[in-house]
Image 1 (cartoon, one colour):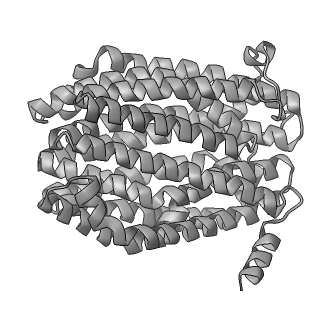
Image 2 (cartoon, one colour):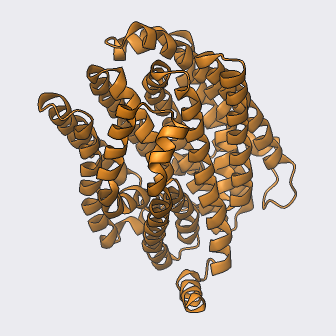
Image 3 (cartoon, one colour):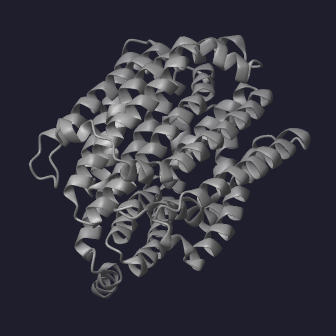
Length: 462
């Protein structure tokens, strides 16, 4: 049976652009990469939870703001990855180097512009958004936001290099970088939070130290190895070519705006939670951390689709881009089902032993996670993997506009009605989460089947 399944999978994944072996060699590191990120983040959340619910709530207040900046950088990163992978599909190595240079300086400039105000005005930012928070929680959130913003300026180097390597198909190097930065974050967190008892300040120092180490290693991975298809030089780093810039912006502007507005909506949702009390914020943070572990492996299908579909578009193999798009959705579903089968029986143990959750907190988080099991299988794969497939072909506007509309109409609008007006509390917040996925699934699948998105890529000679 295994041989039959493997033979069928090989036939489905082999194309004029990729062999099945190449797909496997990229997929495994992407899965391990996503898993390691979420596993380490879950452990760090657990370490912070040992300092009390105030610390968990403080981090949960600051994180949506930080995530907005990270997502703006990821928008540019995604556009850069598409530019690199499409250029690689045409086998124009000069264009590949120039695309890599554009990513480095563009992410650096945007990262500094967005992070510096948070370094200078953390309290004003948090008071504007979460003025109803308890004073002890707010004071801790101010310290965390300021330190995390400093780490983000350093993190721009890591983000840029990571997107270049992903566009080149160097998934193993991406995995190594992920392991380095996240294991470093975990070890520094243990040192500063548990050993030195520095609480929120220790969490900030851990972020800064880990991201500094990760950025240095990322530069070494890009500049030193001789097995990469390109060798970076100063001329490529400081060039400006409008076709490359247009390709990056064509993806990054819609995606960046989508992510900013998306997490702006998440900030409002966090505002709902603040009204429900510190305990509700802590429950949401713990449940969200565990749920991130469940979807971590499946999210690798989205990352893989950017490289695979983008290179097919660059090689003008549009039918294969469409076929691979469908297969990435199936891959995401299979990985999601496997993760659920492994992790769901472990949830009670994780809540009590890993997150040190109080009985009421653990019971409420467990109920939320059980309630979202079936909707996640039905709606998560298409709603979260399909946008990456479309963006790999430069169709960035449609999924971005859709995400913006569903976030504000369903998750924020309906979420406020259910959580606050109808007093559903946290159950209302999580109900609207999967309701949003359901709406996106129906619309994205109809758009994908029409195939108009296959003809939107910016030509290399434009």
